[in-house]
Length: 277
Image (cartoon, rainbow, N blue to C red; front, top):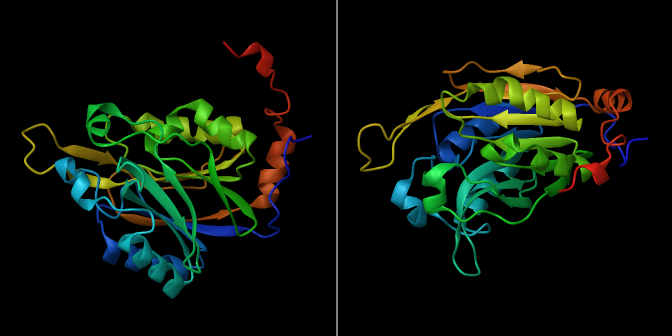
């Protein structure tokens, strides 16, 4: 037996992934309108989608609390189009004022359902500007599915994804800013994570180039695209190319999820007493 209840939804849930080089509320509003028009119930955007990734020393300038003006604006967009929204933003914590690379899930009624702070920071750039989060997993219930949140580099750690699997996550949402030369993460690792932990993973990346203001030559970020949805049966139902903006649509199928988990009982067959160090 699978060690946790399966998804309660009896019908598929359509989601949309926005692969984009645009940032800000106007781009989000446009994507939400297009997603809703095509029957999506949830829109996933890239890492730091409201501000862009390459903020440099402006992180503090753009950071705000999880219930700040940006959240209120996203809530209005979600309500107006009737679609839940996952967006990335730099968060300023209320206690202590620490800065986090965060992602928030807002329901189609404009209610904040979950806020997650990236726990695995990538490279000196992120380590210089952000404080890592300390809470994992972060989940919410939406459309009969248990939704989980990670950000970019987090998904490259099997332990982070497995923590979600053990906590019952059905659909893991991963806003990302994956850069070129690491395309194997999107092409190989993300589908492997979905299969080994028996859940859906939606992975939304940026495209194009960004550079922190005032950065010298060679400091530009070149994003790899390749946004995708990976299914628990090892398939990749949709994938974008490596350079073009796109709005991807995919149906999350609870029946496929249940059947795949029955065929591949990895969690039930674990022997954690052998793995701990």
